[in-house]
Image 1 (tube, rainbow, N blue to C red):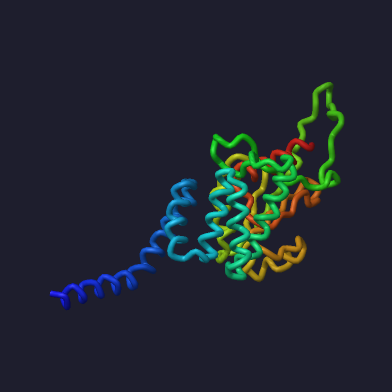
Image 2 (tube, one colour; image 1 turned 60 degrees about the vertical axis):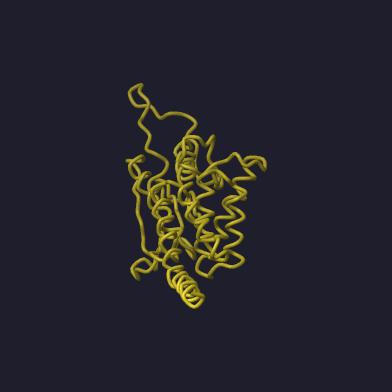
Amino acid sequence: MRRIKWLLSSALVLTGIMVGPNVLAADMQSGIKKYNAKDYQGALNDFKDVLKAKPNDGLCHYYMALCNQCLARIGEAKLHYQKVIDVGPASLKANAQAGLSQLDKVTVRYGGGTSASTSTSSSASSAPVVVASAAGAKDAKADAKTDGKPEAKKPNVKRIIMFYSDSSPGSMSMESTWDDAKQKYKDIEFTRLNVADPSNAEMLSQYGVSSYPTTVVIDQGGKVLHNQAGAILGDAFSSMVDGYLKKK
């Protein structure tokens, strides 16, 4: 009887060892799927299960940071970005550093508070905006008039380019935000450029792109209004675009 119990116990242990990685992979995929569907809290629950077994999983910490950022939990997002920088793979560290830099700018903009949100949730009170140089946009102080009627103005933003990589989690995380923005801003030209395509090498050099994703906003005169590395998510992206549209 003791031998049978020992064999059953050993079998369970071996099964746990064999199945464990598959379970973790399933949780990770489930979390990513929920993140892409904007179920950020559901995704966090899955990622937490992964971290229980693999506390130093860099990719998991990166997605945890993105989820917390989208839920306006700035402090938590910073902790996970820092964890990626400390223990994550080199391929993710640049994106994590860009995410931290973005959140630091948000904190400065809002006087050090954590109420600023990059979330697409309606419960978020406001969204962080990274402000570019005032020289990047021209203010029209008076309406040009034709026959006594104000002349219609073109949007100050002509084109937005996203340089992305298929192997970059940050690039993947921006897909839903990008698609939403294309539907919202019909008068703006949206262009996605794969950094692995040799034909885009000149553009990479022109805009000084070294990490992915990088978002570049260009005005009607071809001047760069905004050049930012790292994922810009949800309301943060809309607020950034709206900020330039108002500077006509």
